Length: 115
Ligand SMILES: [Zn+2]
Image 1 (cartoon, rainbow, N blue to C red):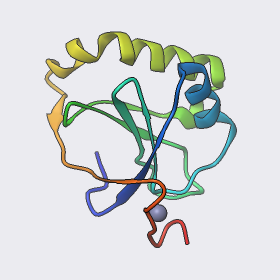
Image 2 (cartoon, rainbow, N blue to C red):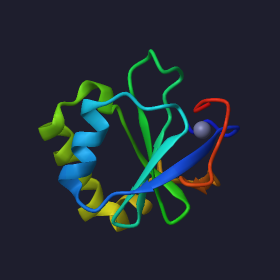
Image 3 (cartoon, helix red, strand yellow):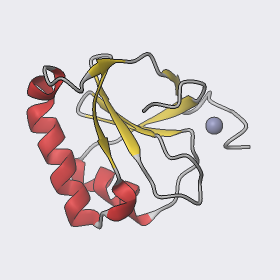
């Protein structure tokens, strides 16, 4: 489920390793999103104290949901590499569905979650 009233700031990330570290070694505001290899990872947690859950968005579809809060960096990296390799196939899965998240450039984004 994607929080449809939320706006996300999107940070570009260069490598899967870097993304895995970011997602598992720090707590992020609820409006945090990352982009790696054309895929968006949007914080879909219900609260900042809760378990970190991310919606995975590709080509305007949510193709996966990953609870990175339960992952260490190695497990997170495996999820990221799997999603990256299988994005096209995941698009065709029955749980894949169109979404229209409001995503903004991280340099311009401000909202109540990150003030
Ligand atoms: Zn924000």
